[in-house]
Image (cartoon, rainbow, N blue to C red; front, top):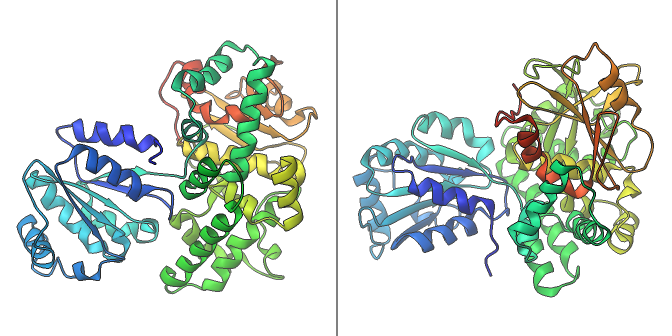
Amino acid sequence: MYYRRKIDDFLIRWKEDHAHKPLIVKGARQIGKTESIMHFAKSNYEYVVYINFALETKYKHILADGYDVESVIKNISLVAPTLKFVPNKTIIIFDEIQENPDVATTLKSFRLDRRYDVICSGSMLGINYRKIHSNSVGSKTDYEMHSMDFEEFLWAKGYNQEQIDSVLSHMLSNIPFNDNEFSVFKRIFLDYCVLGGMPDVVKLYIETGTFSGILDVQNQIRLDYEEDVRKYADGLDQTKIISVYRSIPAQLAKENKKFQFNKIEKNARSREYTGCIEWLIDAGVITECNCLRYPELPLKGNVEESKFKLYYPDTGLLVSALDEEAQEDLRVNRNLGVYKGALYENFVAEAFVKQGLGLFYYKKENATLEEDFFVRTKNNLIPVEVKSNNDQSKSLSALIKNEKYSDISYGIKFGDLNIGHANNVYSFPFFCAFKLKDYLKAKDGSSDINKTE
């Protein structure tokens, strides 16, 4: 069974745009790129030409005679003579192009030719993307795909759009959820946190109605990520890359969640690991939250590069990486507070990234003022606090009240609580995080919700 994804609507819009360029779909391994692309292709084209450079080495030399459309099609047809290329009725899919990044050079020719639609995809594009981009600059459209977000998970569970949009309606009207709404959404949210959004995990859960076998699938995905390090991390210390990846759960469990190299290895220095972190970010298997020098606009250029936090882009994979006792508490009791709020914080970071929001935080040197995240609208900087308990939000209040921070007029708090508003702080349950960008657009009256500007 195919589960609806947000890329589905994007692909339809892409096809309907008569000036559309070849498309490159980026994202980490096993997030559902190929399945979504093939579902779209089979539903919208009479002829589908699918080439997987990782599995089908016979296509390795299709560029031997040049990058023009005729030469490429001729060489594909020599390898697979049964494939049909019918103008205006055919889509060509180049999958796993990290194994053959030169194929991106053909995109300019396909764009000018316009007889065939082309989609490229790959699981490790980030580490090769400078070369891919330089080979196809101006001749392609990029789409960043992630594992399933909470909205896609709700679709998979059978909830309709009206039910899902009611979350945003409650946020905008500042009307608390009734007891039934709150308990249902909270239960589904806790399931989602344990599961994450990897399609194979979600499918197994939906089809069996249990968590049986889920951990095995999640562990295999993390092992596959580590295998990618060994396969693709040329010229870097592969052991160090894997050490960084494995250290993130323990780093997030600290009271001070700033990433510290000496927690990986005693006397470790940042210069020894910087390239390793960049590699993991480019591979799409971790996300970085940048520390602001000052809690003010603009965000661009206001980052302290030596301070950052790292998260897993899928909270379910983070849960699978925890110690067995913590996992048991999570799966049986849904106690996400067991890791000092790190799982809630990782979930909010994940939700922000999947909405296209940048990740920023602030921590004053003397530790009297710190904030988990910041987002921005056209004119406002909004501090966001993630609370695993009901303690007062002292830093949030201080930022709002201090006239020195003129860009900040209100704040947002996510917690195990219902919707509320007091002292210019808007409180929302954790499960509302996936609608924050839509909330900010509606509240600000602007579509200018940027990542970094």
